[in-house]
View 1 (tube, rainbow, N blue to C red):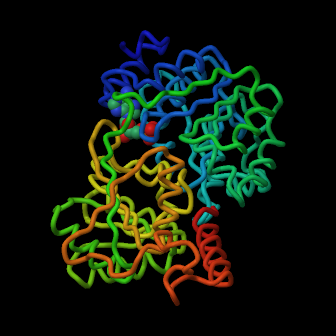
View 2 (cartoon, rainbow, N blue to C red):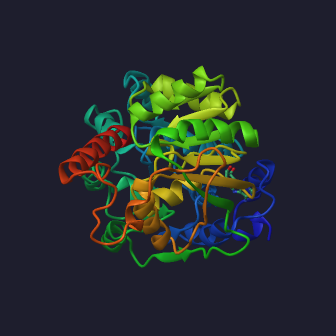
Length: 420
Ligand code: AMP
């Protein structure tokens, strides 16, 4: 099916093809006609399925018939949870906008960098704004832009936007928007909070759920390697060398661990860099770009990089620490196997984490065979494998206080990473 048959203008259909998109992906084929009709859309699709173009192409077309704004009003507002995703989505809009006969101004706004250049940038007006909620509100407070004319609202990665720390800002942004507008919700997962917001915001939405068929299911081989916690970095090094992965994204639980593991690998002669919310925005952008340019072989990160980030040809993802939820697991492993490529997602299962991984497997309705790697066989026994009443591994089982402390540290680190 060609792009033009979805109702896109010849210029935009041509721009899609020029980007190397020979045919629409299922989420694009399902969304584009409805967005062009002006309908509200609630779309749930696998990560890496082409969601960005599914809203960018038809919204750019809709802008063609809208009158040009002279004052700093915005017609299309795309809210995203991270700075990196803002840049990425903004780039897609800007690239397709080049194909249009009239000039379309795209502004990308996020925190962690000086606000002044963004204020200057908005002086000339912007038709499309791609923003993280916090910086958007700062700019509105500074009268750098107004949201009273927004005609199309997109929530990209809506589940993450509703995470702790974002929902209040999101509500504040929604208060500034006009009642009459088109609403598009795109996300890879739809937890209850998203359903509730969708229920209150969307009018008679077209629900799009792309089933994970052979064609749309990313080709990701999942592996679970049992290993003792202190040996994980050594095992990681061993796997990188054994498989000669050209690029690996490694997930850990905290910013400290990201720094620590990256440093250990670097000292062992592997080009590894940390990437997390504790770095300056300039460093974050630089590491990501250098990773894309293949100047870093390994990037060690927190869940900051779990969502939305598109790194073409990423052959492997390694969960050195398991994610907190099954949804985060889906997002993490979805960084590989994108755009029709195959990939491998390796999870290290320490004896302490076995029970948690079983929960993740249950949630995603899939079992992953446990493996051992020669020379890295675990010496401890999985906590859940203990006969009932034996109390697990003596001295290794965390106390209630330990668990609370660990949860607080994890939450603080995640909070620092997701805040913009
Ligand atoms: P997204 O889900 O928007 O992050 O897109 C994931 C990747 O798929 C990006 O690298 C896009 O450039 C690519 N992509 C999007 N649409 C298509 C298409 N119709 N054909 C081939 N690749 C696509």
